[in-house]
Image 1 (cartoon, rainbow, N blue to C red):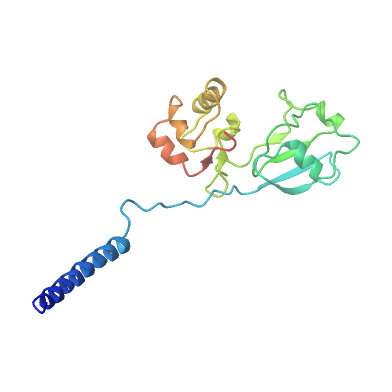
Image 2: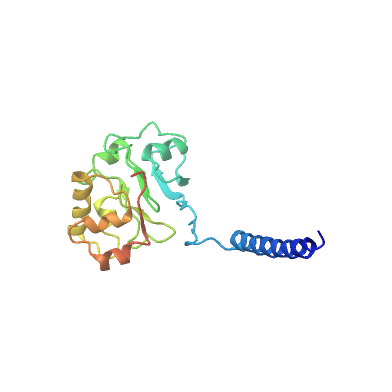
Length: 198
């Protein structure tokens, strides 16, 4: 009986060593950093508001701030509406507005002396698009597109033709599918264009 006591003590010591080894291994596995690459979440892009100048036959002409995607009708409503002499027959009230735009609502007498296109929307200064004021290539007119670096009438028309035949751009990178738009042109544009409501 006495011969078993040292054996049991050695067995207990061995069990303690094995248990300590297993416990240390479990702690190392749990404390080990996970494998793989960290996920970086970029902040959501929040488009800047549009600031436009409305004048002519409206109740309250002036400078107005509206959200991206607003239409001419929206800014007219914000101004309090049209005057009794306003002639809106030559204006597309559903047209999108853009930052820096000047919209003139004509009177009936002014509408008789307009140019051949009957357009009362003046474009902003060339080069007015920036990181803080990007251009939505899904709604931009040919005139707006030509204000972008590296975009002349031919490329502007190609962008519009792409939109009309293929559909709206799903991302700014889709611009590379447009004939005449290469990597160099895209690099000049990528920070000053966006895609809204694809």
